[in-house]
Length: 453
Image (cartoon, rainbow, N blue to C red; front, side, top):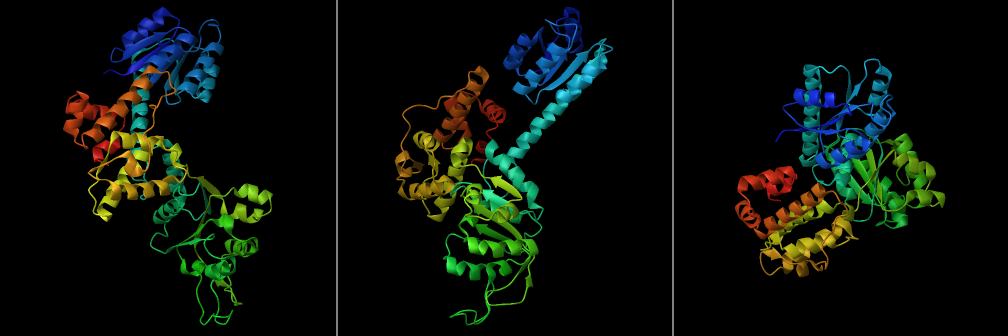
């Protein structure tokens, strides 16, 4: 199918000339701002040519620039080539500043406009391919997910992995903060050195200092030998301080000095010991509120959170829920030597409808239980301890293309599960050929179906 180009121009002569020039494309037309937006919604063109002199003010560029702004607000990836009068370079540059891809000054030359459109299309396709690759490549090893929410976080983690900047992982309990910390370590120059984790909430307050900093022989009753703390054992590697918000206020001052000076003193010792480690902290608490309430030091908050990363809860990662569930199902099936190997339609619906207050940790627990409790090879909602929702998911969108895409994607996934991941049976259930099924999988970017995850 030919690529669609939207031509926005109220001059019929220009419309005809562009149609003749762009015979390799499906060219659609609009002659004012309202019709341009309607055509944009209907055809979703990758490239738009836009005359800045549009009615009701064709003598000026104001209406054309407003149209440009609306197009880019609705479809930021669209490449807009503005067409201007011969002496209107100022407005052409203004359009570029607003986000237009390029500009072209009248009169129209077929070869030049064809070259500009072709170049814009090639760039658009390259950007689409890069987005798909970014979603499918195993960027942060341990992290599983294709949703936009988790992909944004993964890209941020990738960028900081190669540095030693202090990172604060924020998120609800069970979202995978330690998994992120390990992934950052494994993608850093320190990957061959130790990764040492300590949960500040799980160790009694009177023991946490010696756990972190170590102690000298005779420092207190029972200190029969000099013992290294977690900080020293992480030498050269990464120290992960989980639940940093639960660290006692008195110990926070000593932690701040260590982070600033990169030296420690063991409990009962007087010698400063230099330490070369990266520190990653995590908490589910609202540290800014704790700073305001003076239960967490403000200077420590800014020291540990040079770059904060907010890990989204599972309920905001709809399209990842089934992917994660399949991953855990395969993992636990092998671990417990169980028969279960797929989900019923009802189980899929129940997984998607549940709010997951315990996040990924809750999902793991339910999958362990389901693998053990399932009678046959197919996991049912009751095996998961979940109920099938009484109403189908209803989309808020009114765009028919989006509604159709969502409906077809859901139907393909349902058929795939019902066919026990057999592509021939899936195509048969859907009433299409195998090549058509693979084409739809590519169209809707259902990459996990190709790998059988």
